[in-house]
Image (tube, rainbow, N blue to C red; front, side, top):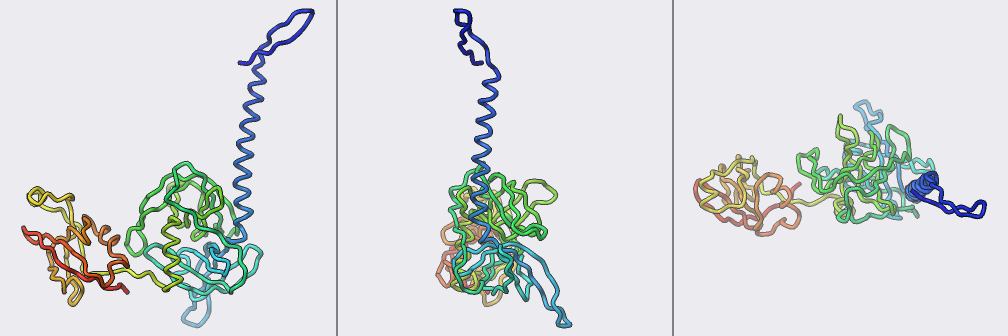
Length: 340
């Protein structure tokens, strides 16, 4: 309640003015909304020239081309490298890119990684408007998230929301777990895949990749830190090098008596159901029935732990692997090979 001083007939009087409070609140709310609108609009204006629509075609058995699907992507270097999702271009024989000004160009596939659902394309070299990757490790729930893409074929559509959560995990099409995934409520639809998720400064913080059906407002994006690492390797090598040891694994509980006896930090391990002949695991002496509980001095409780550890750092490197065989722990030396 605000009371103002008035003047009349030689004396002063006080008057309640609730309308003034309401006007002040309305003005403050409008200013906040205007600031939000300006922030989103500024990001969109700067970023739209870098966002592209992707149309893929496949060649049929009779030699004809048919449309396979559409998606989104964004240019992240001035010389025309594009980041998108692996699943957008997975089966494509021809990849056509439409830029913000309506130009249609054929893009070259540089490399693709199904394990993280990231792919890199290349446009003819010229001076392109490019987006910059931000640092997704600094994201906090509640921050503004802005998505630009081509949902259902509507090019350069904009949606905005907030970061709902960070450090989520999703299963890729290959079965590997993708960590450090961003959850947002910015509305996404088919065709948004591969497009950028940006912060209020216009930096890419994620690559839109999935919508949880039939939920509403649960959309997922591969983090920019994951994507920036993957695209750099794809540009350099065309593939992401990972290591493999040659086992067929299954998550199993470790008997309680061995947990207590060996004071193990985990309750489960990965049983080698099968060991590929001549594989790194076979050469190291891993046997069917062994329960893997450690690799490279790190705990292995699930197959996903093995997937995380078997990266390019371990390729052709002598590495310790710890297994529980019947009632004894064996420390073996394994040299993981490069996966194909």
